[in-house]
Image 1 (cartoon, helix red, strand yellow):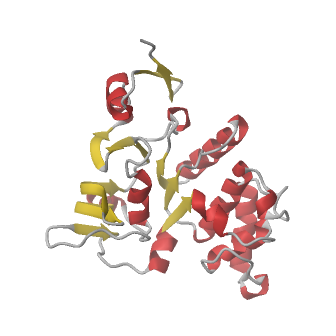
Image 2 (tube, helix red, strand yellow):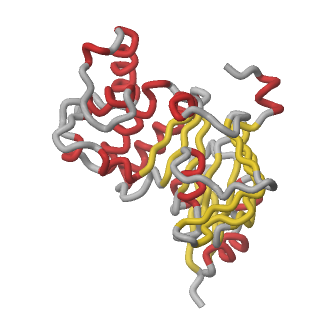
Image 3 (cartoon, rainbow, N blue to C red):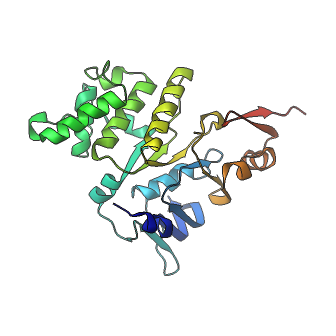
Length: 270
């Protein structure tokens, strides 16, 4: 546990002069950023701007170019055990859905969170405490009706909730989400939004990417804008989410409005 004083003084992720290349193409340039305790952060930017690559830096599936001028620390460590990281930070990426083996039911998928795989695990190998965790997660994420269904038969929203349950078997205090609202209908979007708010209210900090301003969670208190691999704005929502700034970000004339703590955009016709 991190006490309140440490939270005030420490960032859980710190990047200084970080550059990322993929297939000899530079994706992220000169990143200087701290992700702090008690923040809920949304990342916005055009397709191909480097948003997902930034999140993959955090889960260590992508590594930056190492130089004597750069630094990348997670929980104040330059080298961190992947299993220790998974217990502190839950990661949810859309591509994870494709890793689930055919024929795996939702209950088995949740069990698999304990071994880092995407297939069934024998429940007899788990402790009573672990089995209770799973039961509680099923109730909390409202999965009772689908817990015995084949994962690949589910809707996108149901899959998202099932994978969230898998992520939370270790009750991480941080959650990193890449496009959690992608391909969801209105009802599923609402359900995922409500579940994330519930987690935030239980002191889980989230950092997430979205293309939809309408999906920005009201409890979000930081906005990072990325364009062409560079952070161009970083601040509080009311300071960053403006018509002028987002029009520049997406190279299109749009009007931004806020209603009941939710945002939306309206195109401006010439």
